[in-house]
Image 1 (tube, one colour):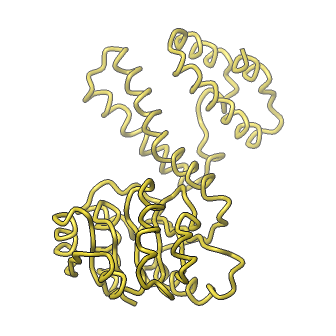
Image 2 (tube, rainbow, N blue to C red):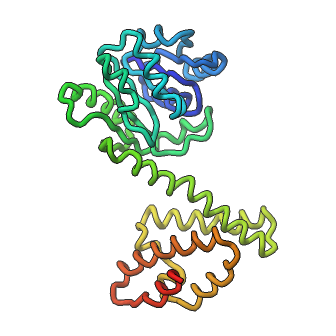
Length: 288
């Protein structure tokens, strides 16, 4: 199976390099930015294409690694070429395969294949893909797509990655989960950092102070699960400490809203961990 890429950004670079290292053949890259596709081809020891038609012709599986906003227009553009029997995969976490409907109408097979991983660098992120969990999404009712589904499944399995098929209707919810675990966590750490800066910490000291607790907490969540990793004043049912936190956040509305919303989630977890404890006093504080 020859794998081609339309789009030569971080995802295209990283997936191409990763597949190549796992002994898959790359036909190459096309990009509107010819300099980018040339660099991607050099990085993966593959071929640069000067037009989409030739790349599609020489590829069995085509990954559309372009911004989400460009997928619909790109699908329409590609559909003018011979795509019958070809497999097209986009890598959007939020959109499902139906955004490529023009290609499906012309006899192509369409998928979304998403690595559950933050890809931040063209030249190094491929090293992290061995740890990525992949989700595969396509039509679940189309019997003629079964063989193509097996081919995409084998592609991911051959790289020794864990994966899951996901229903098309759940893609937005799935992507929201990724945002909670990735982007929104950055917001929380930024809030924690700013509170330390308010205490007189330097940026360097704040980073050092938070790094250990962040690493330790994530390790505990991953290895023990949220319930067993839970510590702190909510787990202890320490309403006085919670009240003091809420008081110190007065005037910082965004911080106060985030603290209350997340604390309500922690109360739910604490209730599961200690079903005989009465958290009503904390709940009242969080509702005020």
